[in-house]
Image 1 (cartoon, rainbow, N blue to C red):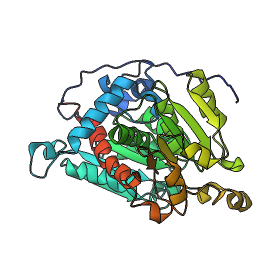
Image 2 (cartoon, rainbow, N blue to C red; image 1 turned 60 degrees about the vertical axis):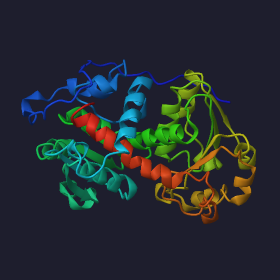
Image 3 (cartoon, rainbow, N blue to C red; image 1 turned 90 degrees about the horizontal axis):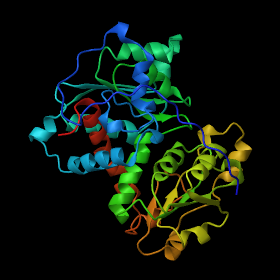
Length: 359
């Protein structure tokens, strides 16, 4: 096992606020641009839920208390009904979605989340081709322009670190919907919520992460979230060309999280509480020969389900190709469609917390 030092956490100014409903803030003044806005995601105390300006940029910005606030709010969102006061929590607010990469679940769940809370949506898909980015506009200029039209921005981009760049110049919340193979924090939050809902805990669990771990932003973000909890053991099961990158392994080692790389999926399946399968991401490969080597090596099928524990759960961030066979779908341990639905409730919670705070 490799052991490496953890990347140092950035330090920054801290901005506190009580977790209470606030009135809609005025549009930011252009003269207010400064690095103080970055404090919303680099505050070294990680009390995200107490900050005035809440960005959702990476999983490592949260502590356990913040996660409990988010999960409690998500559980409330499950009960929101049409026509109730709760369904008007974000009335008058506008969310903009800027997606430079394709998305189905993430974009639609964010848009549904905003609509279910009474808010409005300005949406652009394929922003790299059908926005001013195609004319050479920088990401920073796009953010500074779009924030004048809305109250928060949900962004997916192909470049690692793009969400952090956006947050540094934004005076409204930036919610990272995926930045290339880097981070997908809202997916990690809904994954954590799903694990807690399915098996009742996030401490003392064994998790098998399977598939494309080098390019999979979901597994990277989930590993960072799970590192907050005690008694977690992570099995990495991946073809040689897409093994988990060293920065995540060094972070886990630094935080005393037990991890191991394993070649035998059957061995792992028998021992885990959560089997987290991912697809091999063809679009991330520059050499299709490497893709051919990776695809199809680890398949979850009824023979794998048969050796899993009766109270274990199979998860997948979706979309799937062939890495979980469809005859697994009727097994009650197949949680991936419940997982996708949980994304709606978690994103409703995040939008409410970012824009108006807690009740």
